[in-house]
Image (cartoon, rainbow, N blue to C red):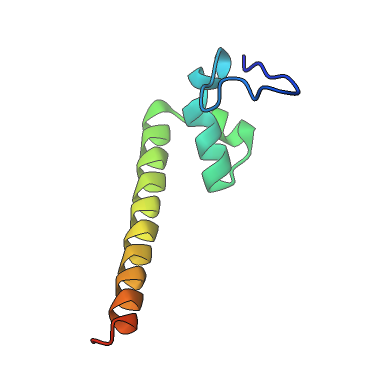
Length: 80
């Protein structure tokens, strides 16, 4: 488990124990907004499809952000 104190944040970015073992489950709950009991009822294949969907949605979001950032830079540099 993560350890921290008032003066030390502990091991940042590291999950220990059961947290890392349940990463997929909690990512599905957080990203898709399903309840924990709904996620626990999913088969392995359903979880992998959900993880693929989450990754695809993130890729789509990042691609649009990169596109709009490049358009903003183009406009700011005075060319179309």
